[in-house]
Length: 286
Image (cartoon, rainbow, N blue to C red; front, side, top):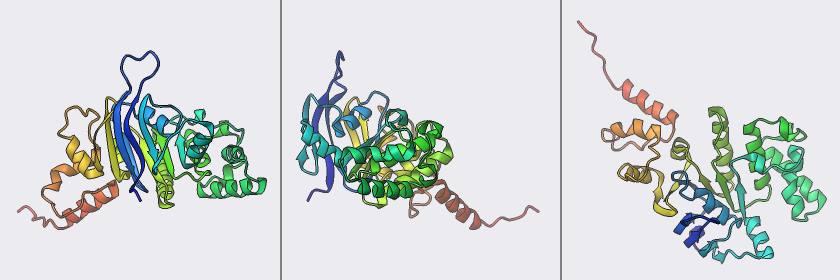
């Protein structure tokens, strides 16, 4: 059995009237049951990659494979594919289609032709999983952006996909909403779902991701575990997104504390600082 859930093999894709392909021989593999981040500059092909991975766009050439099954673009194959792969758009307004929260979560389930009682049970479980019970009958237009994003994720997860794709999930969210999103995504990962997030938010990536894929001009330029990738990127001039703030704060201290694992959150970093300070003996001036 493969340790990878999704594979792109030499994939090319061009938009109509474009002078160069958006994806130019993209090859990558997505580890199963991992939290993976896809990063790169605007225009590098991240959103296009997600659209192809969900079967919304057909590559000009190359193969896309899900757990040894190639992506095919006939109606029956796409229906089966999208039962296993869910995509959450950057703008929830593009995804929410029903008048209320509960109705929107039920939409995909009803399209599967499930019995009414089963749909109702799955909707109730999803509302509970995403802490949306109090909003079940709320009109979608009355929700905050953070709530709308939560509903859009809940609607996809109600279908229990094996792979969840998210395009810029932290866009327009404040710090509280981003922390809430981290909690929700961690809960999804704990249930065994493989996650792939395309984002520019490197601070979020540094705290959240197990694995990182880095794209540039439609190709994969490096990949690996989070700390190893950021250590590598500092020496790659073509990568112009900067570095995570916490990584920059820790780097000057890392050489002096070689046996201490790099902190992946502000809480961990503060804990290290408190430990260091508590071991410093201060001699009062005479």
